[in-house]
Amino acid sequence: MMLTKREPTASRSPAAWLPLVAVCLGYFLVILDVTVVTVAIPAIGAGLRTGLTSLQWVVDGYTLAFAGLLVFCGGLNDRLGGKPVFLAGLAVFTVASACCGLAPSAGVLIGARLAQGVGAAAMVPASLALLHGAYPERGARARALGVWGMVAGIAAGAGPVLGGVLVSAIGWRSVFFVNLPFGVLGFLLTARHVPNAASGRGRAAKVAGAAPVAGWAGLDVPAQVACALCLGGLTGALIEAGGRGWASPVVLGGLALFALSLPAFLLLERRARAPMLPLDLFASRRFSSSAVIGVLLNLGFYGLLFVVPLYFQQVRHLDALTTGLAMLPMALMPMIASPLGGRVAARTGPRPPMACGLVVGGIGLLSWVLVDAGTSYWALVAPLVLTGFGVGFAMPPATTAIMEAAPAELGGAASAVFNAARQTGSAIGVALVGTLVAGGGLVAGLHAEVVVGGLGFLVAAALTL
View 1 (spheres, helix red, strand yellow):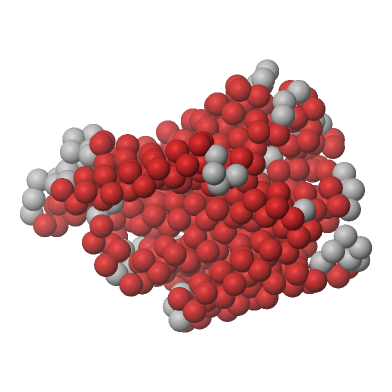
View 2 (cartoon, rainbow, N blue to C red):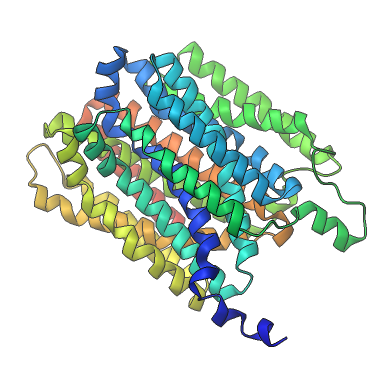
């Protein structure tokens, strides 16, 4: 009993944070690989002698698999438990990273990037559920989610910086090989130090006095295939729209697949005895609003993160290394903002820091409207800092908000919805940049993207309040 009462103090011991370190290693790699490839694209194209369309899929194929399978993997987490799903995803991701680094052609590289996305989709919902179980005390959990959010912000911002350094010093293959030692270390730490919690559905059934629906039994595969096709069709259409145009048969086919798969998924899930994604979750205003906020948050941030390296390299004519260093002010901000946002959320609840971060980030995004080809770099520092700080400050409380809006036994599904929403927002943001740049040039496309993204941040702040 005394140990239970002293849990908040014990949770601050170094050994108590080993589960957080283990989970964050894998999560860092997942988010890093969304952005690290951006500044390496010209070198990959030259090295593999491939064109722009293939290079787009090198970047976006990862996001496609990631977004399309998140809900499915979140359901697996609730049935099988977080630890085995996380370990399997980390193993797949690490092996796929090695295949990316060794790829002899663009086709092999794209296939390996899709496999990386599969591993990432398994890890992300499991990582949040594992942290939720490893730190049951609210204050410790808020601090852990603050670090988790900080890792996401650092990885997203550091991707272009690290990519520029690696490409300049070693070559483009190194941006994939760098995952290997950290993937192995994360696997070993997770296997040894992360608790092997029971599956959420098993616990829920036990509490209700019913027979548990766990493992592979009762897995509604048709609904999950429909979900993957739904998100895959939408994401694929958005990816291709930038280069092919909205009237392209490929884009129209993706939108048609989305339009047919969505009602099929909803019907199948509504009829399932034990659905992986209980639709009743969306009856909660807090839950559904948090999912929308996830879309808007990544739409603005990742759209900017995609176009800024292009601006520095194609408009300012910087090399990969200098581009990475130029983005350093934005990359450093989450190191300060994310743990601060987590601590504030632990004291005030998630809404105040969410709203504050979204407003600051929205101002940062809208500040880019004043940027043109001749703007001094020092005038860009404030938009970089404001955007990075705002996103870093808002992310941990946004994650806390959606996890608190769902029952604990559905933590994997809640995490999957939030991250699927964020990755869908990323795809929309990147596709929007491609469409806007194709229509008016890079600087005009940058201006249009930051207006859409900045207004999206302000709408998200209003939803928060």
